[in-house]
Length: 161
Image 1 (spheres, rainbow, N blue to C red):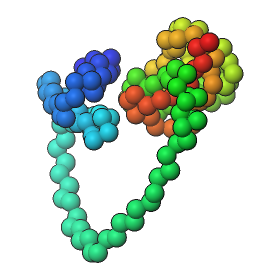
Image 2: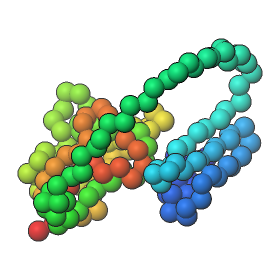
Image 3: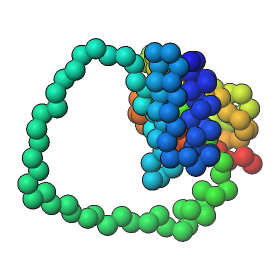
């Protein structure tokens, strides 16, 4: 199964609302489970002969402390609504540069056109160039370089005007 097919399967599962999909093709077994936040998780099982027993664990009186989360101000939400969000089409590691010694593909304030490369996402040892589907100006980079990203995670804000 190729990466593109796996990506399309992940998109399909995310849009369908299914909670779990299992696919077996020869020696490859793929299970996609969607969490409560509608973000799919991909688990790929390959045949393994080694069996390791799990250590016994005891949890005694574990306390959970709730931390209040502050909601974004409505002003920021209104400002961001006029921008187009470019999201990650795959799960992987986000890179702003084509290589460590090169400059970033785009910076805040840069004008971009359709088909311009914005970043690279490494998935399963493959580097996938992420191209813009819109024209505009980069307003904000939402992910740090070399950070892991999830499917459909916002990467950039673009002002289309």
